[in-house]
Length: 218
Image 1 (cartoon, rainbow, N blue to C red):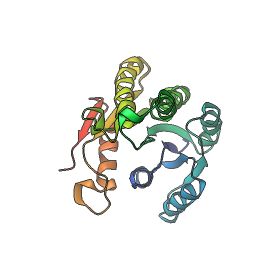
Image 2 (cartoon, helix red, strand yellow):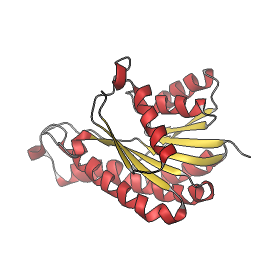
Image 3 (cartoon, one colour):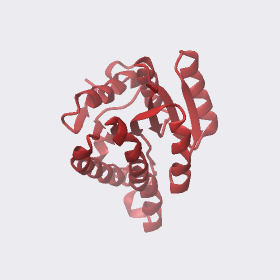
């Protein structure tokens, strides 16, 4: 039997992507990390490898469907794709009255459209393994502010897509779920530590029951 693989789209600098890789790696998964920052990918994949985890980084532009599509055959080389995590987000600074339609379209290309592309391309692989799609949600989807409006729009749309997708894929035995984070991600700060938050993803995927968990960090 081939090794199970988790693919994490959008590693991020807050440590959640690395924590997910470490947790799933400790469960015997091979880890694929995907984002544009090749140097950061090398750093995180290297840290996981030093911990005894099979890990690779694939530089991927999540605003480009062709770049995403090109990554999947490379992911499959590690084993059987079992879990996909969409953790990417664009945080545009500025007040909503200053944004243009072009600004929002550019942000939604990553915050929503790439989630759809990542998911569609994953589904054929996940069908064989009754796999899992997980998405990183945020409190800003429900409580938008004047400094995170673009991100809040994307997170709200992504959450609705993920919940609908879970219903759609039930007949395929694929589970889609959202971890909606209602706290900061801060290493070394108790329940806000990325390793604690990563556990919520794993638990959601194992339970495969409720499609959303709200992680409050206390």
